[in-house]
Image (cartoon, rainbow, N blue to C red):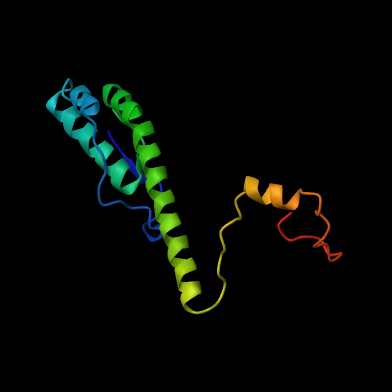
Length: 134
């Protein structure tokens, strides 16, 4: 009755080693028959770990899966965004180590800078070229 199709291929790296399983989902699954409990647990675990999307499910299992899916999707999105951030940070560190591109932090706006630059001698440092921080 249940067919599983992969949402992503194995090479894409969209597999997880763990996921959060909420009590509310467990309690909903506990109301099912033994056969449907197994189908529900397996479906949720496969979707959470490997992003395998079920093609057809019994209606009561489908309802529970639809309840769990937004939480799983949200958690996966956060997880993969963190991985991307860590990969970018590592790339930036590698570039610094080899003396290539170094990403500098953006200058934060400071009130003291405005007071200094906005005084009566505002143009005393004007060399005719536009300022880089403006």
